[in-house]
Image (cartoon, rainbow, N blue to C red; front, top):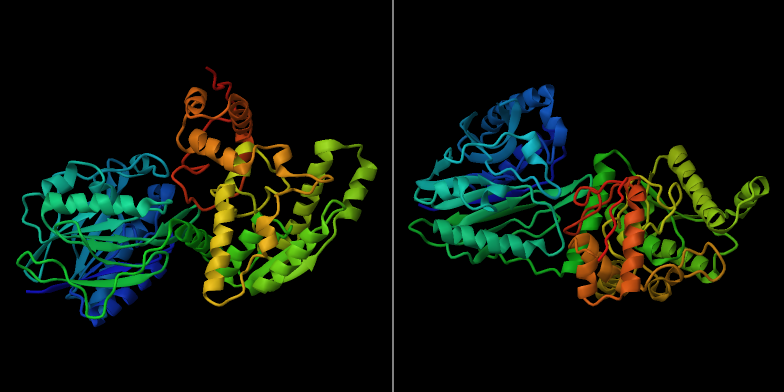
Length: 550
């Protein structure tokens, strides 16, 4: 007998139990109308994910448990009680800690509960501190339409042994996997390889459903998919959008099938996916935190231009307030590029020269050199924060990962803001993203959002005459290669030298990175898009006398 299963890739919000329940009801109704017998939703979809220490609060645990029971009854009242709905939520406490569970709702009740066993405790994950693990021998197999469907949650398929190994002899017709797997540059291929291996291990198809949406500094990219027993791709959802994916299990060991007319979504380049992740992260941070607009400084440079383009794609150009704040060091072409960018994206463009304010400070304080440069950046932050406070838009910081790594920013100046879209984007990727966005616009017959002159000119903070970033830093191609080794691969000085980098560059970059930890602690949140982001992934002490030496 054919069994139809829907993978519901949805965007939930942490803590919003009622709205998340409504989303489950709505997508289940759509799935059933499309012919689904089973609906599979992502990890912790009812509570939102990651819940972090909110999961330890007794009031939240009780509310989640009650809402799960209510949801089961609501689904039955909606006429959907015969459908098995498998979704992630917060479970009851074990050893004074709650659990991460997959609940099976059917017939107006919670029919079964599976508890995640392998709890990740690396990178962005801190689950072992929050959750109690399930017993590896406590497996859940859902019977539906004569088919046997095993259940697992995310990390349970990444680690050998545990519940997946325990189900190897259970005669499964498919494995259902609920996931809350954040986006990383190039991660999709790793997921596919892993799921292929599990399908071959169990001898059955694997259905992998993933969250989509932004949550603080994490972005969940969706990209749900189905592989057959040989691990070959059968169906997939597009990334970075909500989606409902329907497949059928014919029975008798046959491979899953898709509805007539279905086609796999086109493959997206890694740089295209990174751009979409940044857009989604910003959109959801704005939307889920109750903002309607954003404000940022438009310098005419590549970083602010890219952030403005991302913001326009995320929430509409009419909701972007771009402020040009020229000083006596601002070039005419930078002012023109800022105005041109604002016109292209339809931003609310304003010009607020900072000269008189800077001169007023200098008349009262005897400062020169770097202190005077930083003063200009801090006056600009005062202007931007004044607009944010008085009109309500979220202030965006426009710095990139390369600058953040080496401390090439001004605390309480250009580092000020509530969200930093490029926080995890190296400068070389900034240029790649800008070029990709312009080329995508041109291919669609639209005007590119970013002036090409902003992309092509040498980067400069324009805080002193004829200033260039290269006056203080290695060329960004070289800098980013060293940063990739030191920050993302944790290579020491000796390994970097063995990789072919010259000693002078290595000494400079490592010294700058090590000295800037205190600045990074004060930088706003931004979407994680690489394997090692500052903040959740890379956490070093500020007071630290260790230095890399041969």
